[in-house]
Image 1: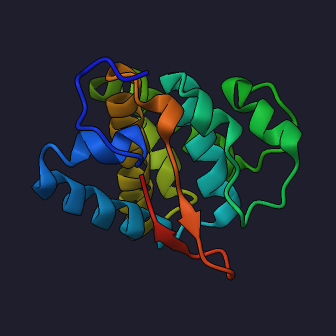
Image 2 (image 1 turned 180 degrees about the vertical axis):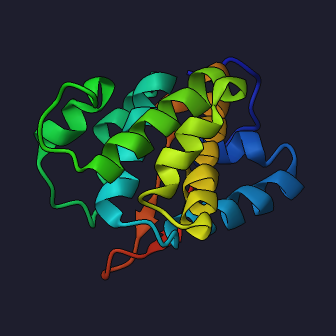
Length: 166
């Protein structure tokens, strides 16, 4: 239930909240679409998304699955212990570490961690990863803090492409 007063309507609470500032609604829609088009490997994208969802404690995001995800549910369940859970590649482990540090202590991200990321990802992929993590962190916390996290809705066309968000 929303922690702020929302305009009446049948739409999702997140959409109604963003409707209070329409210029943000347009920006969020564009960001959602851009992140959906991320060039990160889809498995990596979903693992990182789940790590951020767990850090944000967004129940909807933790329950939701990307329609392109066909992976092992144990990998999603293990993202909180990426360093101990078997099955992740070295690239996934460093990306999950990066996502975790980004969410918990971004100022503490060291050159050494960026160097380890660089062993698996080129600069463009690191930018991609950083913006993907940032989007999930920002919008997940937006919804969680305002009590909107139970109203998250993503809509996909028949081919699994994002057609409408929040």
